[in-house]
Image (tube, rainbow, N blue to C red; front, side, top):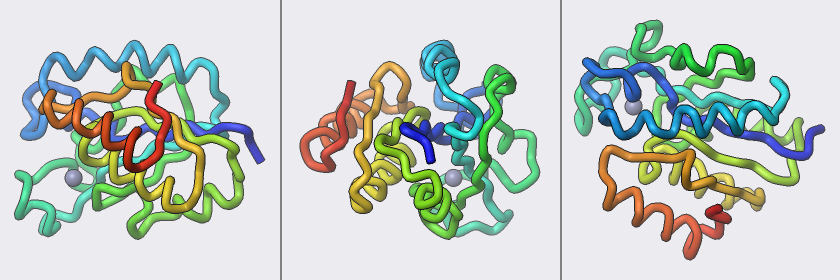
Length: 170
Ligand SMILES: [Zn+2]
C-alpha cells in the first residue's frame, strides 16, 4: 500500500521527439523538466507509466496516423525519464484502464491519491482521469505537467477535468 501513485501518460519518444508522425511540437517538451522534478519525490513502486503500444493494424489508425507500434523506438519512454524506475503498462486506447492491468494494480496499491501527468491533456490524460474518477479515486492533475499539441483543447480539458470530472487541477 502507498499513499500516492503518480501515473505518467505517454511520455514516449513518438510524442515528444521530433521526426515522429505524432510529435506534439517543441513546446510540448516544456513539461519534461516539470515531470522530472515531480518524479524525484516518488519511489519506483509509486510510479506507473502508461504507454501507447499498438499492433500494426490497430483501428486507432483510422483516426491517427500509425504511431508507437509495439516494440518500436517511438513506443519507448523518453531517455530523460530513465532514472525514474516504475511499472510500465502498455495500452492500446486512450484510457489507461482499457484491457490493461491498471485496475488490479491500483486495487493492490490502494493509493489515497493519484497524480496524473503527461500527454495529451485532452486525450489519454483526460480519459484516464475520467476512468480513475469513475472508480472514486482522488485525482490531482498538475497543469504544468500536462500538455497537448492543441492549446485550445488543452485548456478545455483542464476545465472539464476540474468542473465535470472532479479532478483537482493544481
Ligand atoms: Zn495511440
